[in-house]
Length: 397
Image 1 (cartoon, rainbow, N blue to C red):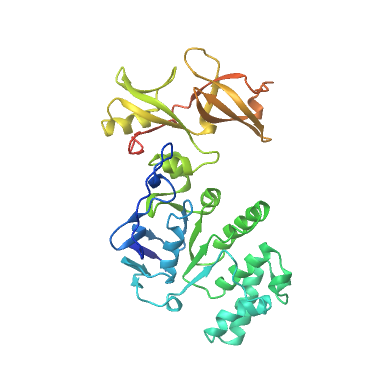
Image 2: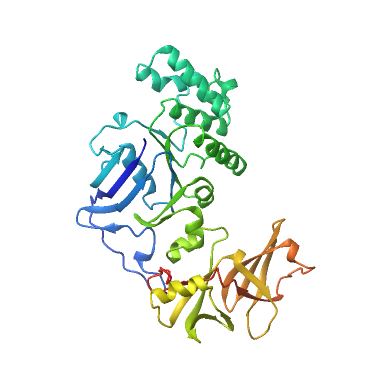
């Protein structure tokens, strides 16, 4: 078993200097709107606040969020590289708050590889096992097995400087898995690679997790990595967990506007609208368009007795459909038309709001969507999202 449980974890960094809010000048946004919005208490800056998560054996968990949201700090607390201010951390039902990193049976892969430049690949892989005084024949077996799994057998006698970025990252992962840890921690391991190598290494990591009996905790700011790798995703902002769920759950049912805008590429379009009731059913009004949400969404809204109100309406670019019914749709002008091969991304200006519509090339029917041309569109009833404009919360939950 390799379970990890974080209960009410909090990390506070001492505040060495009192923070004095800057006065905003005229025509300048308030100072508190700039940068991160981490809590500042008398104890200091709250980097992670009330983090709760139970990770199952062999589960692949991804912590994702913008820079400064606390995801790497959380990972470092699991590794024992950061002290936990409050809360309890369990690995296999064993409280490890005060257990040294070397005694937690974890391994970590860093962003910058952290390989020993004077050692060969084989020596890099052997090093953590020699420190633990593992027998020589066992070391040789583990190193050869890891090299075969990662496809680096032919590089065992080379030094890191003779390897490409992707090969070095494989060696760094290999050095972690030879230890056969209960938990494998990965801190943005692909961020130094180019786009093509990142895609290749994502596939390699997916294959790897099915070949070794280890629980994975993976940190990234790239939501594409999160969606493709994770069994579950933990979305963080300003030190707090926003939502935990499978990739499909957070994509289809974001709990607030932050999650809705962060997950999905291109990001979700947001419009000002109004939620009304007509003939016993909810309807969403956006400009001249009236969308009646699906039955499931009707039940969710009714269960929470949501009143008529102004709302923020969210619609993903792939869930917007082009129509040509004047007076019943939203009209906009094309600013940019991007041909992406299998689809066209239309950047539309609709009543001063920018939005993106994805149109499959098979549905173009000869349309060119030249700059300045007018299009009319509406939203799929089963994929329209309704948010409270003040709290940002999804009104369905």
